[in-house]
Image 1 (cartoon, helix red, strand yellow):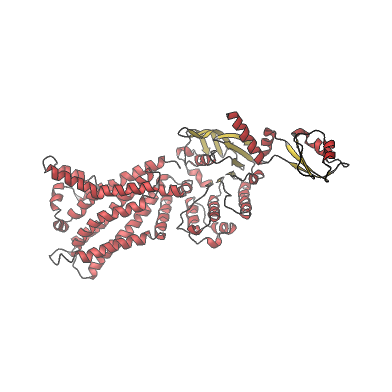
Image 2: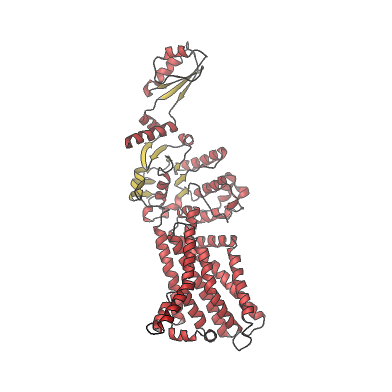
Length: 276
Length: 307
């Protein structure tokens, strides 16, 4: 355990020194704040809580940004250290490869958690300062969004490690990461939408749809945040899907956790077999 | 006495190429072993297998009681490794990196300051490593290898990038550890450096071990002639030749210097004759085959055997 924490702390130190933490926090805060003030203007005052509007716009944006940021810090984790030669020395120490992987994961997750909590938290604080009224339900939904954003980040950190453990060169890892991002964030939904349009509801049942959504972590995230909380789902017209999809928040959260564990385990197995 | 390192018929293949081929040896506590060979002879691969970073295709390795090939790593607490061209994350300072590695080995961080002082890095300790020169990184690499009172030190080309003064300091540090009972394995291209320092020499050629023994044993095995070099007054070389008698490889280097070979048994007799009080000799030097000569000899012999 000490080894894992030592490696995690070193990872955090490096991210602090590279200005990664600052850059990420500022980026997320800037996005959150601009959405808060620009995004709420058109809705005027129609009885929905201002925070709900922020949750909708911010979570739509998170789906694009968080996976990208997570892959950016993780795709380099193994292959980069091998290429630079730092892995050679680290693995000659009394540490197991699992400890190295978990330490890095913990460190990167801590950085992401910090950036998300403070970046998005800035939006909520700004709303409070501007005097908007925010209900307790909205706060819960907001907390849920931050939690799932971090989980979504964890999923893509784990996927990034798997990519990093599989390839021989950093450039390949970067290329594959962009491909995976495009596939999960853009193409998957487009393909599914296309299939549904073509099918016209004849063969694909709603159960099949919800099943398919679970195969994409970004859709799981979307379902949780846009359809989960009642106030929010009214805003997004996602309530229909949520009813039909019949996936409880617990199932969605569990799915995200599985989406973290599976790539992380595969990354560990691949990394253990690698020779330096 | 149990061996610190034991290799039995180690083979490592990358596809059709055998990087290491049937290498066996055992190292005892307190030995200092020089691994020599060309680039690609298998030195670094051997180090990596001893550390468990790479698994042998066949054969058995034990290091400080562990089986590194099976993923055992507890013994690495008492093992120091300095990789060839060591690298560190450039964003952290020297002191931060050293503290990290010391804690990872469960070693005290108290010695860091004195070690930094000893290799002349105190002034740079709080600067990020990306500002370090190659030699400074190498010194940092040496410090980390010394953490945890190592019983075994694996040093891959440790003196590259160090200036002569630091080389001496380096060998002094290594010698101290050896006197405390540590086993040292080091590889180097600078053969003259190793000559006096290694108690055993292992020569590798294209993955095979072609020699294994102390320098005296290797000299005996190689049977290379000893060279005797005599300085004479100018023009007196012929007079010396008459005194010494017929010897192999008589060479008159210039008017003053004469060199000839002596078979191992004939050395004393030839010196006696050459330095006869009535003779022309002004000075005499005995040149033992150097490690360079031995290395070249064993490589040639292995090349002939393979051909």
